[in-house]
Amino acid sequence: MNYKRIKEKIYKWIFTVLAFSSLFFLVGIMIVLFKEGTPIFKDVGFFKFLFGSKWYPTYEPPDFGILPLILGSIWVTAGAIIVCVPLGVGSALYLNELAGFRQRQFLKPIIELLASIPSVVYGFFGMVIVTPFLQKTFNLPTGLTALNASLILGLMATPTVCSIAEDALSYVPRSFREASFAVGANRWQTLTRVVIPAAGSGISTAIILGMSRAIGETMTVLMVAGGAGVIPKTFLDPVRPMTSAIAAEMGEAPMGGDHYHALFAIALILFLITFVFNIIAEIISRRFRIKLGLSG
Amino acid sequence: MDSNIKMRADKVNFFYGSTQALKSVNINIFKNQVTALIGPSGCGKSTFIRLFNRMNELVVNTRLTGKIYIDSQDINLLCIDAVDIRRRVGMVFQKPNPFPKSIFDNIAYGLRVNGIKDKNFIEERVIQTLKKAALWDEVKCRLKESALGLSGGQQQRLCIARCLAVETEVILFDEPCASLDPISTGKIEELILELKKDYTIVIVTHNMQQAARVSDFTGFFLLGELIEFGKTSDIFTAPKDKRTEAYITGRFG
Ligand SMILES: Nc1ncnc2c1ncn2[C@@H]1O[C@H](COP(=O)(O)OP(=O)(O)OP(=O)(O)O)[C@@H](O)[C@H]1O
Ligand SMILES: [Mg+2]
Image 1 (cartoon, each protein chain N blue to C red):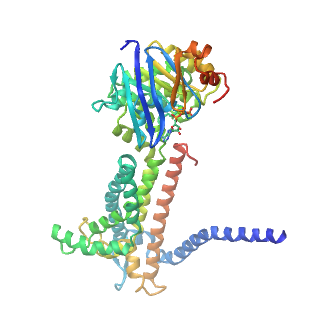
Image 2 (image 1 turned 45 degrees about the vertical axis):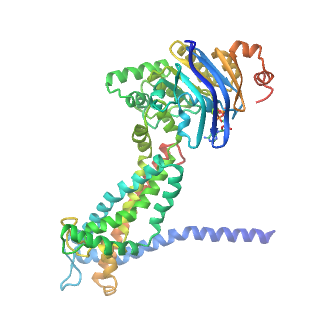
């Protein structure tokens, strides 16, 4: 009897520890980022670091202004949103509202499969197919541009957006649709005036998580964004988003040096951005569930 | 056809996949009368009334044989749009289902989707139908608030008001009082009797007293079949079929 009680207690402890370990890792990562990232703010100055327009970390003397990197990230993310919102939300609407049972059975796994392709494969696809295409179409010196990265990132974020948006649509109770049809609304009116508004915050959540996916993606942008650490003027300029700067330069930056701390600081900023995105997404989706009378 | 007949079902069979939910149902629904449909749970009452506003089309993998007529017109002909039918045949559902919109917008919705843009007209109609549905006094100061904040009984009256706003010819009530207390139920019953003047009404109910109180005709369903149909007074005092008698006296169901 006693033995059993002890065993139960041990199990409880093991699972508690496992459950809390992610919290532990989160806090650990934050501590490391803060510890290794903040020294650069002291050396360069917080605002000069954030809004400096030159990123020449290996020059003598070096320039540690990450504005070009931030803008690089913003451009490719914005571009990715333009691609993945219509694609993702559109396919979610199609799957949920128009597709027959068979089409749905067939299409849903395919869209989900898109999510499981390794990012290096996407990058490869971008390099080999999209790059020459862009180069020819726009007559560019290089096809490795913000546009290229946007297209690929948009494609990569589509399954995320689609599957979360589809969940949101399927949470809209059938009774809302029936009520709408019953007063003589047609399919389109029901969709635009009842279903989409009811699923609206769920769809926003999907978009924010898609953004968070795009801004944090590394391998693809490293391969197709072009890598130029200058402020982009058009979508056809090569860019160096924050993630690719970290990935490309971490190996060469002498440990403990300014460059090293600067890269950590970039990681810290990136972390904070995605953290905020995810919190916003969580708040919105919680409100959404309450609005539809699902549990909070 | 008798001009007093508003709607008619002719040898109707209905299938969900391979299970048959209705078996050769024939019925006449008379104009400006209340027809009650009774029967044990799962016998096909909801399935049946949803045929009159073509609501079952929204359920996948279903099949209908036989004919449904409204004003002696077959409503399932290819050239007839379900939307037009639903503008003539309104429905109040078993569970109150207001939209997650304001009280005002809930009622205005039916008008707006039917192409009415005149703001004054909409406002007038909203007020008028709320009064008709005996809800006005309770909500007149909170028309802009979410309808989901209303009580169950208020929500159901709101759904009735939403249905009334469209000014259909028929209203189908699917157990409208199932989730309501006796006071709200009483209000809705009064309303149904009042609406008889302008509408043809079909009401599904599990409550025998309610059927007796509000209806002129009663149909008794069992396992997808219409066992007996007739004047409510006859059905309740002298049912012809033993099973009808057993059901209304509470011996099964
Ligand atoms: N969407 C559906 N898919 C498959 N079968 C269904 C569906 N809706 C109803 N049925 C079946 O059809 C039969 C009739 O159901 P229906 O809802 O019409 O009964 P009801 O008389 O309204 O019952 P209740 O009094 O409980 O509301 C039942 O056997 C039910 O299981
Ligand atoms: Mg029912």
